[in-house]
Length: 248
Image 1 (cartoon, rainbow, N blue to C red):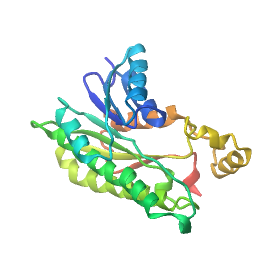
Image 2 (image 1 turned 45 degrees about the vertical axis):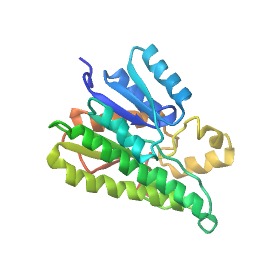
Image 3 (image 1 turned 30 degrees about the vertical axis):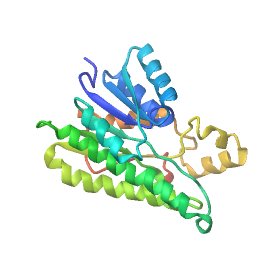
Image 4 (image 1 turned 90 degrees about the vertical axis):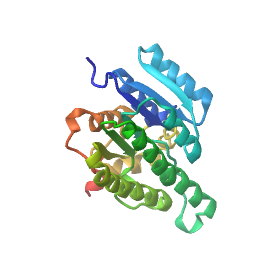
C-alpha cells in the first residue's frame, strides 16, 4: 500500500516547477492528484505525463485569482484530503520603483488567492463531517528575512507565514493541519536562466552555507512529509529548505 492511497491531493500552480514536482511526488505515492493552473494546454500535458507514469491525475484549469472559480472548483470535488497551495509569483525591483500595479498583482496572487484557495479547500475537507486533512502553503526563505529588490515578495511571504500559524491554531480542533515550506533558491525552468548568469550564481551560492542551489525534488519531499502521518503532530510550522540561508 502506498502512502497516499485513497487520498485526493489538490496542487495549485501544477503545470511546471515546484507545483509539478509536488504533483509527481504525490502521484508516485498513490494519491489521486487534482492539478490546477491557468494554462489549460500545459496543464493537460503535465497531467498526461503523470498518467503515463502510472499515476492518477486530473487537470482542472482555473485562475486562482478568481475567487468565484476557486470556490466552484472545490465545491464540485467529491473530496479533498490535501492542499498544496503553491501558485505564486515574483517581480523583483527596487522598493522605490515598485508601481501600484505590481504591488496589487503580487498581493492578489501571493496572498489573497492563497487565502481564498485554502479557505475553499478547508471547507471541502470538512464537508459532510469530513475528518480533516493537511494544507501546505508554499512560502519562501524570504518569508523569514529581508532582501534588496524583494520588498513586495518578502511582504507577501511573511503574510503567508502568519496565515499558516493562524489557520493552524483555528483549524486544529477540526483535524486540519496547516504548515508551510520555505525554500531557498531552487533550480526550475523559470529560474534556470538567472543561474546561467555566472555573477548571479556565484553570489547566490555564497549566501547558502551548504553551497548549492536546491532541487524541486527536495522541496517536494518536504511537502510530502508534512502531509504524511509521520508529521501528525506538526502544525503551524514552517519547514525551511534553505541550505542554512536564514541561519546566519
